[in-house]
Amino acid sequence: MAEVTLAVDGTTVTVPGGSTILDACRALDNDQPTLCYLDNLTPVNVCRVCVVEVEGNRTLVPSCSRPAEEGMEVATDSDRVRHSRKMVYEFLASSVELDLVDEETVAWMDRYGCDPDRYGPPADPSGDRDQRKAGHHRIGPGTAAETVHQPVKVDNELYVRDYSRCILCYKCVEACGEDAQNTFAIAVAGRGFDARISTEFDTGLTDSACVFCGNCIGVCPTGALMFRSEYELRQAGMWEEEGQTVTRTICSYCGVGCNLDLHVQDNRIVKVTSPMDHSVTSGHLCIKGRFGYEYVQEVGDLAVTPIDEILRRARIDDRGPRRHPEPRA
Image (cartoon, rainbow, N blue to C red; front, side, top):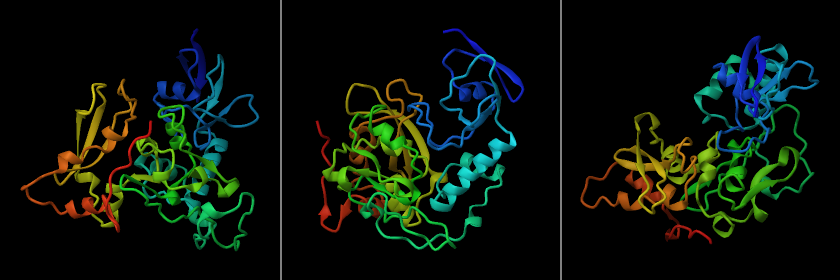
């Protein structure tokens, strides 16, 4: 495909045909903020923080999916772009808990002078959003910011779902669907402000089509989906990401050759990820690769670490220890 030449903020750049505006920006080391975009997923254009201004276009366009065109003139830092991005960030931060987003997102919000508190304090939680009827929206008091608060869903020992942190970026839906797992265990339920990620009929994960690959966790940008081990350690105030080491190895279960990044704290594996630039996995794993490391933790007579009891709690509920959910064919 022929190359195309365009101008980004007055600087000319040539990119391969089929490239997006975001690709052109990155070719100039002029990166743009993203929340719903990942290199290993299909762009869905829902977060709108990457919008840019294209000369001749009536509306702002998402740079992550809009193809670059010959002669296109793009502005990434105009007043219109800055105002739009600021409003999106503020609306998200006023309704969703964003305390676990990455430093890059925080830096973009600071750059645009975001002040979500101007919409008022968070409104009181309005019960289980999964029980609301589509189209029946609660009327708020007008003096507080409505939130997407939900009780944390802890229904298995592998990962938890805290949808109070969900920004509806669709990454988990894409990873569970055609882009990776092809399981289609989750989708968007509800409409408008009541839209949320849900299993079929809001059934528990262990009774759903979920195969517990954990690929949804691997793409979540806000901590709405989290390893049970990480969740329990955070609840106990013992999650120390700065003190963790990350060791790359090869999964020991089969001959595919998936790369694993083992996140280790106090000489214990606390979670497993996979590099997105790995040609075999593209960041995705199966249940064995992501969660099947318990045999490594059988330490025998070795000294017990302070986090062992917390990790044990992640594998046991009030009914005693349970088997991990079995993958479905």
